[in-house]
Image (cartoon, rainbow, N blue to C red; front, side):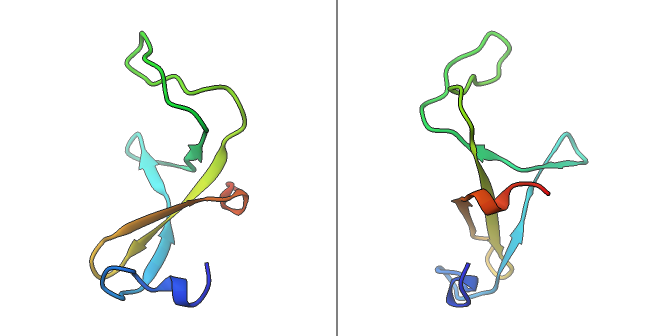
Length: 77
């Protein structure tokens, strides 16, 4: 993300990189996979097979606007 992209497009506040939490304590990196999800018996969406692209999300520290990007550099280390 470039220096000018570190500013919120809505209010010009500072954009801060973060991640999503799941199950109350565990953080995870979300992946983008091409194709629509399908219904599953277990109330979870089945996604098409294939390697997903990690998603990085930025949050505006002023207004809370979220902006996400699917890029390989967002993979968990």
